[in-house]
Amino acid sequence: DIQMTQSPSSLSASVGDRVTITCQASQDISNYLNWYQQKPGKAPKLLIYDTSNLETGVPSRFSGSGSGTDFTFTISSLQPEDIATYYCQQYNNPPYAFGQGTKLEIK
Amino acid sequence: EVQLVQSGAEVKKPGESLKISCKGSGDSFTSYWIGWVRQMPGKGLEWMGIIYPGDSDTRYSPSLQGQVTISADKSISTAYLQWSSLKASDTAMYYCARQNGDKGGAFDIWGQGTMVTVSS
Image (cartoon, rainbow over all chains, first blue to last red; front, top):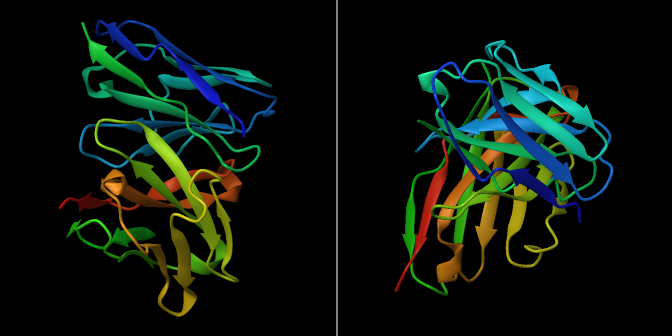
């Protein structure tokens, strides 16, 4: 099975900061990498699919990059409403594992 | 607008059986894979498995195979997740979600979640 490792597991940043989360796959997954946002008490929400494609309606301050085993998720200017936990997910081979999550807090 | 509506919260005792549901509205329910995702209290997301309601082709996470059964009834646009004998460790929030092959296989539409509590 492919393992997904996210870092950091938690992150504290100020409004307006640039925030970066990384996700590493245990083997090559090409660009089959998705990112989700989950706010407390809510279902996850798709933000980015296929590494870098923004889901409809998602603000352009969110972006993704990478290929193979190393991927990056970026918020260019952190907003208060971005407080959430973020997960990566691979879609190369089942089981389509998620990363362990990165909890983002406001400093 | 496509929606997935899940059945309500459940409180069960260890050893009991349970079947929770996920009903799709809108068109094309049988044209997408539907997945189940577990989230144990205070923990992350865990991919459990997927089903293609059109022909009931099913894939399971190896760690959960044999522990749960995923099924679907395409005539009523509903997918199911069931247990034959619940354990306390099955206590979790369970989400169904639509897997969209046009979006990298991502789960693009999610149900609201079903909380399952197993306690004696």
